[in-house]
Length: 308
Figure: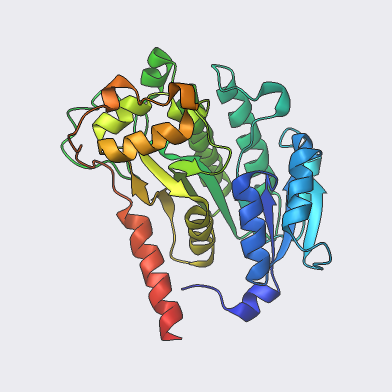
């Protein structure tokens, strides 16, 4: 059951980091739905990204409060969370370490630990929505031999990631596991959204999610998600008291040559627009990943709205 408009009007939630594409979209939607929003910005957002948040949101909106919140500064996190009943947490790499490498996992795990610990110390906190990734689900040694679709019960294998230098998958998997361990230990009500490749105007071939894209494509697990869809999903799992655990979030599967070519042309410069060799196939790969759990929840919420 979702919260009513009256409930939302009296509630404060925090979005961290609010300066990224997903974070700023969440701030916008939450304000529209009547929440008071603490928009927590990491230090790297003070110039271009910070300005974009100010331009996107109504400057005179009394329900918007902007905070500086460094995920490695515990005090700044607790300050942004003060009085909040919910947190939407999206990790954005720090500006001095923006490339996913073998060291990023340690950084992301430390940030997740600090944020979850701060939530545990926030008396008003009711639910945390933690943004993870499909890359924390799809990578393991038995890629070609799995007998059933991958879903939220599957976890990426850490050793597999290290072996093939899948640093984005390694970071997301370890950070999410760390968050779950702390949430269970501290009794924090947490759900995760494991999103597909986020489609946004800045998307290019350097996106760390794309390491292993050809293999994901051939395995039938290469999925993408639109910004509005994943933002709606975050709010849906926050408002529904029955939500629990992990939710795979995507609304498109790249599993045929037409879609692969279209994505390749978007990602690559015009001088290098031919798709990778492994994508130049006419066959359609069978989808082997399921987001049924999230779809069922969101369909139920839509039915509830229509019946009111």
